[in-house]
Image (cartoon, rainbow, N blue to C red; front, side):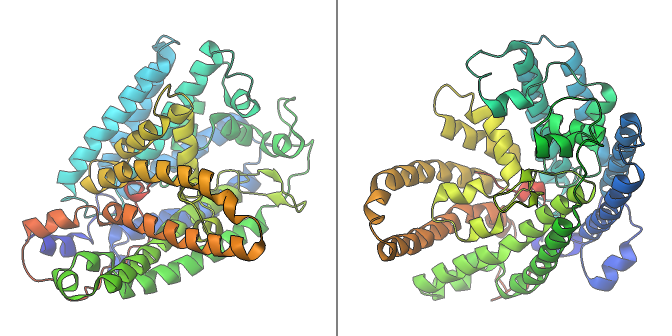
Length: 477
């Protein structure tokens, strides 16, 4: 039975078996134990990278090489020989970058990256019995797809960009006037800071970080000098790293406890559906969706902390006069939990994927940009039916929410009490819309498994805790 395989196979991995005793001892799937081990190692390596391979006395080539070798080691440790797919995509896309016509370089790279990712996503369905493992080689492939395509668009824009687009400061800052070298390309795509769970960042920001100009440019706005490490004293990221690690700890505790209390699969339990009142099912759906979020918060926040520990992610000085280390953050938890509109929620969820979608699709679409962006997001996520239900549903919800907010909100700004009522109502409506939209996304193939394996459900199954969301489960509207 497929459901029996789901239980036994959750402790398998295509990667290293070295930590199998740890997996058995704690009762966590080995693929997730490997992931956590790599992220813990990456955090320590990030501090070492910042202090002992500082751009002040280490050449960019050495920093590129070390970051790449560590990254390759991580994917081999986690995914075994399947890591070859990651190397193939990077090498082929670089070949396109250096040989293809500049007018079509972005198109060829996008077609290649998305097609190869799709093939791997389809094979994942069969290799992993329709989504058994939460961590597999398609996750890093999704991040590399973002990086290779965004880089190709920025190289194209630097050589063959319409004049009306070059006027915007953010656009002009990130376009590339020359193609990267092989070591720069490999380091950008395969570095240990982001290889497993991202985030995707702009190539120019990453090169500034490697060469020691990152902090200088973000704090002073200067673009001069080969190595600006000495021009602006580097602020310490320790406060930001500590704060984010504390958030990770809270998220881990919440996820491990809330998941057992509110398993997402209980929403499709036949007994629950037939016997529970509608309002009870609605309330359970709401709380089970809330319970599923901390795993995403954990994975993205720990990745952000790793980048900060290496000295990467300085955004500049915030309104309070403090140095912000949120340049490549993927989430804003407070904004998500208090969102009063569908757009505000998705703008603060998987933020860097939103930047990628905006760069390669939304800002370039001549018609129907919202619909095309959601379609691309669905293709990027994978082949599970739940993804397409989610993103197709999100299109009319986004358009409707935008229209309602534009035409109705102005009537509720006359006083603070009235606006407060409006905010509470729109918050509840937003959360219910999110609940309805993402339920098929999180369930993935549960309905499929029910068909393959008929039989009574446990009235309240205790799902195996999973600490790390795969990039396949990282949604982006």
